Length: 83
Image (cartoon, rainbow, N blue to C red; front, side, top):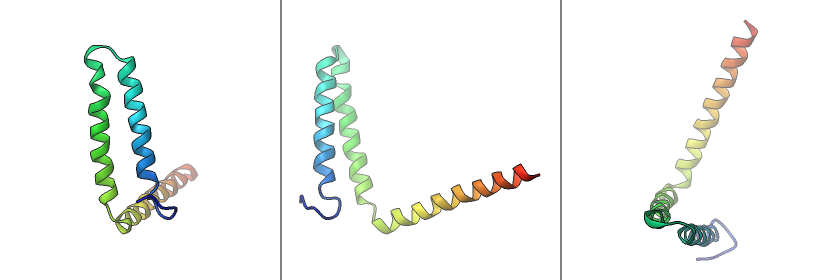
């Protein structure tokens, strides 16, 4: 699915950039290092699939918690600086 709405266009773009990078690195490498970019690309694919399987509501909740922790640490720094 390649549509203009949502994130449908990002997956093919990321796949194309990853493929181009792997091919470039494997051409430039020597010996065993020719295999390493392919292994990294396989792992990136699994990580991407895992991240894409997380519902947007969960990611939104994690974002709120993250910004809350950052704000709490900022307030803590401000309190320590005033003493």
